[in-house]
Length: 219
Image (tube, rainbow, N blue to C red; front, top):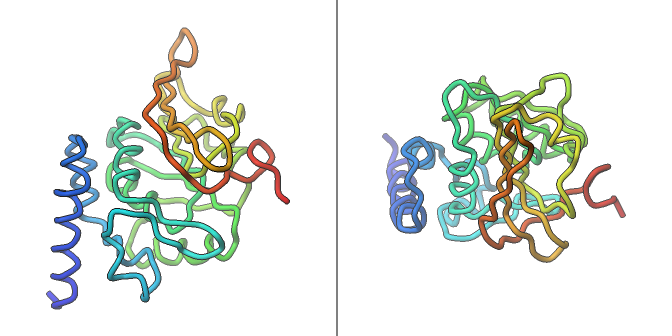
């Protein structure tokens, strides 16, 4: 193993211990995925040394790779099983999709920025994530042809919960989405059962805006 690989592996282990386990993340599959996925490969070469820090980082086009703890918290909230099909809205760097792909059967991810879509699709191929299916589209509309989904994760802040996404959630399905204004949001978990949608509030957060037909309008 190359020396730099050993260094990044050590940083990744410390990330999990100090930033994730210490804050109450207990799902063994989430912890294993966070220990495995090479986060430094999802940022630019100039930012690789900061990839395992306790903060988000820019990935271009005004987008960010989320703080590791937020990735772990949102993933744990989805309560994923190995047979689950997951829809991700906002591919971004591709890191969240890779974490999901380590746990779930298949991940469908949508990105609205073409340059990021092309870059992440190439990275998924290089890292052999063959259970990730990527699409260039308006994520707020979901992916009706592949629905319903066992879980849906939205990685950008929405002014309200997109109705199209709720319709694409199976009975027993879970959705995690940040909802609020353009400066701060509340992370919400939704559970779809026979009686309707149940909500759990997970705390405050801050994401870039979810742009699209059922999100924030383009300016």
